[in-house]
Length: 55
Image (cartoon, rainbow, N blue to C red; front, side, top):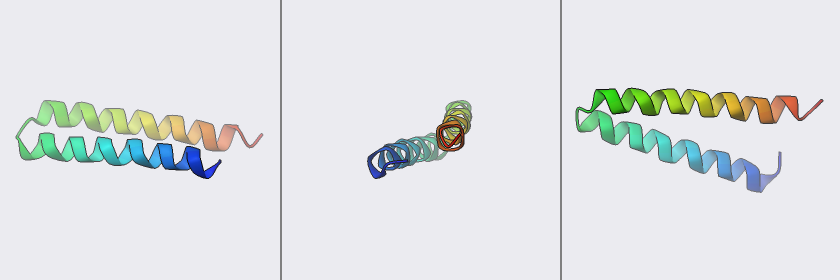
């Protein structure tokens, strides 16, 4: 994976984690959970890109 692509993934994950944290602080647990699920989906996409592209 190129450094540019790796930076894109890192940036996305950091933004989503910060968003989830802000929702949690604001007691918007439903939105925090949605952000959590989005983060998990993003990790799945990242793993597909990293491990499937090596074949």
